[in-house]
Image (cartoon, rainbow, N blue to C red; front, side, top):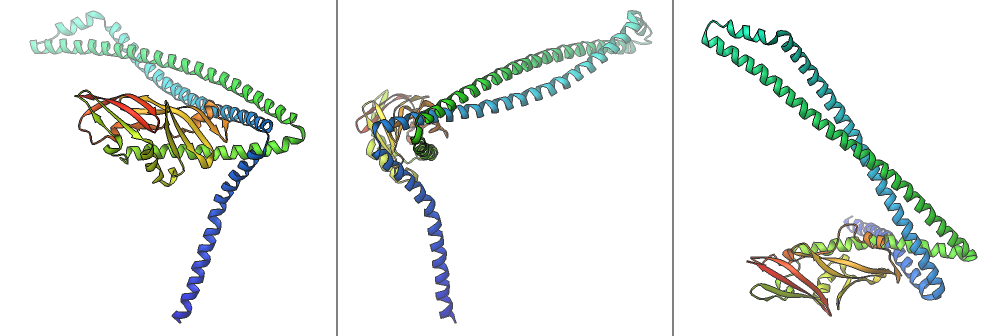
Length: 375
C-alpha cells in the first residue's frame, strides 16, 4: 500500500511545484519582455523618432511632477484645515474659561465694593484678642491675594487667547495661499496636458505608435524608480551594518589628520553579495561618481559631498533612463526613501576617537577622503 501512495505523493508534489514555477516567472518574464521590446524599439528607430519620444517623455515627467505637487498641496490644505478646526475648538474652550473667570472676578469686586474699606476695618477692630486680630488680617490678605491671582490669571488667559487667535489668522492666510497655489497647479497641469495632446495630434497616423511606446517607457520608469529607491535604501543599510571593514578604508594615520580611500572594486564586490544590488555598478572617476543599473538602463552621474560632521551624501548632477534625460523632479523620486549617505562613523566604528570628515574626492577607481582627528 505504501509503495502505491508514495508515487502519488510525488506526482502531486511535482504538479504543485510545476504550478508555482509556471505562475511566478510569468510576471518576471513580462517585465523582461517589456525591457527587451523597448531595447529593440530604440535600436531600430531614427534619431528624429527618438527625439519625438524624448520630448513626449519629458512632458510625461512634467505631468507626473505636477500631479505629485497637486497631491502634496491637497494634503497640506487638509492638514491646515484640521489645524484650523483644532485651533477654533481650543479658542472657544479658552474663551469660555476666560468668560467664567471674568464673571467670577466681577462678583468678587462687587462684593468687595459693597463691603467697602469700612467693613474690613470693622472686622479688624471687632477682634477680641491679638490672635483673632492676626487671623482677620490674614483673611483680608488672602482675599486680596486671591483677587490678584485671579487678575493675573485673566491677563495670562487673555494673552494666550490673543496669541491663538493670531495663529488662527495666520493659518487661514496660509490656507488661502495654498488654495491659490492649487489653482496655479491645476492651470499648469491643464497647459502641459494640452501641450502633450497637441504634440500627439501633430504626429497624425504615428500617434498610436508613439502613445504605445510612451506607455511602455512610463511603465518601466515607474518600476525603475521604485527599484532604485530600494537600491539606495539597501546600500545605506549595508554601510550602517558594518559590511565595510577598517581594511576597506585604507587608512593612513597622521597626528591631526587621517586620509583613506574606498576602492571601486571593493565597493562593487560588497554590492554583488546582495541580491538586490547584484546588478548595480558604481564607478569612481575623476570628480564624479557614476551609479549604473544596466538591466534597467538607468545611469546617474554625480558626486559625494560633505553632509554633517561624519557623512557624505551622493548628489546627482544628471541622470539618464534609456538615454533619455531625467528631469530634476524625476531624479528626486529615485531617492523617495531617503538620500544615499556614507556615514564614516558607522563604517569606522572600531575607531576609539572622534573625527570629522573634512574632504571627499572621487578619482579613477577610488573614493578618497580626509578625516580630522578630535583629540
